[in-house]
Image (cartoon, rainbow, N blue to C red; front, side, top):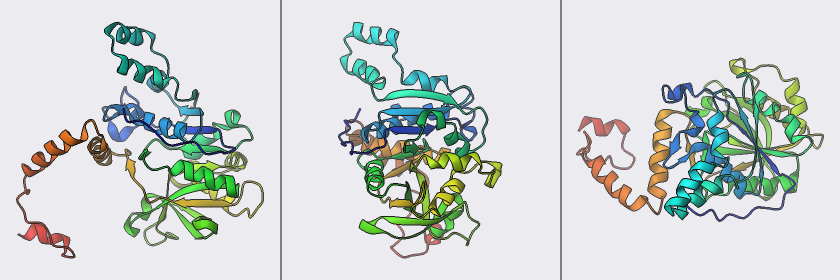
Length: 324
């Protein structure tokens, strides 16, 4: 397991909320009895990367918003006495420490969402646990490479600006309908100020190609807004709609909303194709697996149909490869 070396930042934020109540229907039948969050990304479930990211940023209190059939998520971060005894008896110190370390990552808490009413509703379920403190929200489908300290940078911005902070990334204009998109203006120290948000805008109607990705640092005022936020796109309570209201509060409770523009390494496990790319990318980056796996991968790619086609020169139309 790679060693995590990032240092926590001094911040008033102590708690992280991780929504993990989705049904994972895109991955059926694998997710019929196994939570999507527990699907392995190399040798760790996807949800572990997210909890490690929160812990690396100094957030030692993690609340999972779960649903039915998510017991495996809870068990993963708990002690496993029988397994530990077996590993100890074998003298397998490395794996024993890996298993024990999961229970030390953070203080884990769990609450059920109850009904799939959207991300905004899932976050609202954290109100009793979070109270009147600012908190982070990390979505499990977005994995941030541990070499990139996005959450730490967001906490630094929050420490300077207060209010709320979202993470943005630039996407191709043809993809803006897949994301919540932000209208922004420059602020101090390279940080952006969010002036508006639109959840999955129709083609051609996005305020920018800055898309919101699954990292937030939120003022607790968002709970009051979510309590009266009506269902939006898809009939769900959208977190984007609540943040849109906070963005209009210039210095008032919960506002303003700032953004960190992320240009680092981000991996998506939200659908089958992107999940497979994530596994390959992270396996290639592993010092223990990468060298041998990359060698095998190059050889495998050379055996695929079409591998003998000439490379398309820079600037040539994409169709060129198919015509040779």
